[in-house]
Length: 218
View (tube, one colour):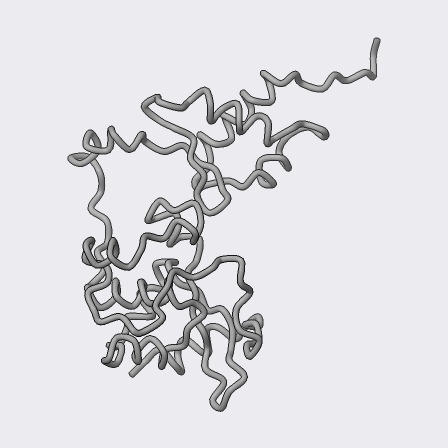
């Protein structure tokens, strides 16, 4: 009969989700995927089915910061070493700064310098912001209204972490050369479920560029 439409079956929905994930330039959330599917389609079921189907294959479906993407299987990464483009390297100071932000967020520049024991060189925070590893989170309700920093989704994606719960312990970070400094008393992995201190206001639109110029420089 004319005018009637039929919803795609589960196999077709899974096929469409597979196409979306392969074509996407970056990881997609379940909501991103659902918006491109017919009304009533179960994106979560399709993602789970794809994840099971690709498990143990050359590419696997991985969750990164609550988003989904196909990734080369970890045990086959050696095959890509000769063809992979050399990534932009972070200096030791930038890695230490990034680690401090990850483990102490939200944290101000002064607090970062207190943990490291030295001032942050010009451009270190600018570089982390530019690379998308760090974001401006808010402003403390203290004199000077200093900005606070936190990690961004790009940080989780780059280091292959599904969430902040997967951050390695302090000993692992030091063994990997990511945290080569004396740790303060009370150092611990942050709890991602915490909303942060109450003495902080969110960054407003148009606030970040001005702050980056005023506060990141020496």
